[in-house]
Length: 399
Image 1 (cartoon, rainbow, N blue to C red):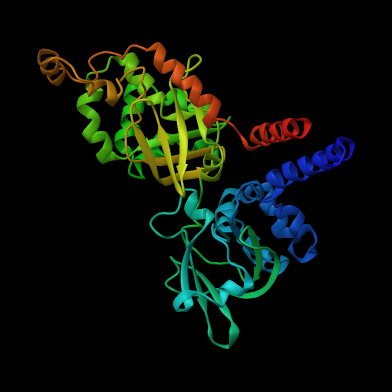
Image 2 (cartoon, helix red, strand yellow):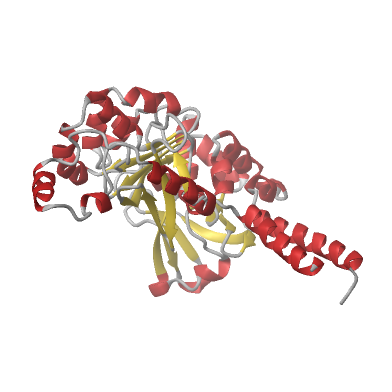
């Protein structure tokens, strides 16, 4: 067996490499990529000042349709506001990976793909989608879905590619879209409840305004806010239980649907564990767990599990998701297991007659202990897991 003096340096090197690969494997920086190509300096500048660069960098899979300085000049000549320019440029950022080879391998020769403009929630219908078509003679055309099928630009060249992470492709012209070019309100003028009302969450929006909980949501937008919005049919089915809550319980329930930090879908997928909410007022109070099963992201309380079904708005620092169930905190609703526990026939009859939400559920010490245990396991991140594994390895070597 080799002496320990030779094993420890190797072990330390292994640890550094492992930690490095776990934190930088998907890192990319669109500003640095384009800085190597002066012909895209104007495009690069506007990605920065519109904050699109930061949004591109935080996504794990992305394609940027880059415009050279001449193409950008034609866009800027229209004298759009900066917020409208951001919408137009966000139409040139595809939320999928298209390398130069993939462009010529599109199934049936054409594909419709979503853009960052669609993700903002400002694009009605399918106007935030781009049509990519493999044309004759080796050319590939690009056009906005709301441009009557017209392909405005063609593929010029590949600027940079990190397979399945980021692809930067030059196209010949700006993609035209009446929706993207429409006058755009400044972010400070955007209204959370109005956004939800227009995207299938009007019932939840109305509850926020009626209870006064909307003020707390709005106060947190600038610092970062993630909202989980039950859709209108879900709220309609839940209203009998909601009406049985007191005014303070209603506010707590609604605040339970917000996290005071911006969490993209990729961030939620890589941050399994306990999440504090706008209703959290102490340790193990009004929190829930984020769990993933492949591409499906679920939110689990001690009472039930809800699934994220779509994104209404994604414009940092605000993101709004659709969910398929109302989130029920254990502080207000008893777990299903407790409701189904064996009881005397008399008790069963009373339980069946009494609505779930007549009064807040009392906190059970056993539940708190269970939550603590889950914090210790589900919340274990990659770095701590590596350290624990290596500690065990060192112990074996010393033995």
